[in-house]
Length: 114
Length: 115
Image (cartoon, rainbow over all chains, first blue to last red; front, top):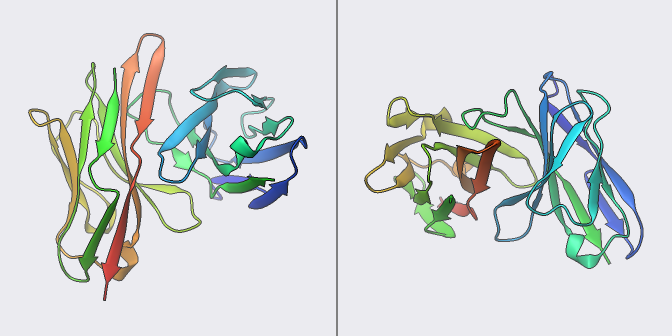
């Protein structure tokens, strides 16, 4: 049981390039999330999804896009990368959208934009 | 409105001594509270959670936390630190809001354990 997996682990992008961060979970969770973690800060929610075909914005969605075509996969797209998007990105999933359920996190993708 | 404050950005203890990581929260609704641990270059792992049952919550690796509503606190403790406890710890508050729920992460407390 792999849980939540993310690829790549590390990436360096030039300003203006685009890329997709991949996220897959094998726990059959309907709910999935993308966060970014900046130094000295807690995690900030970028986008989340409550099921295949349904996504919604979180706290910091600008500069990102998501899609959810299957229950397992929730890719995060960066268009026109900017230095402000240098961060560590975490994907997570949960069994329910209820506040009482914990989230399961992937190992993260460390992205540098120069 | 919800917020969470981790009162210490860094805590340093000696191996074998007690650990105390402090967390205060505010929430307009009855919250769920979580502590997650993040080891270097790893994702976050759940340590324990409070969801309106027993106020003293026991988690993995000997950690526990007590929900104190009157003090709006959810401090994390461990009687005896181990070198493997060195990591970053996040306090998280989550509560239902109209149309869904909101989860707020604290800024984190980095725990150093000295031999």
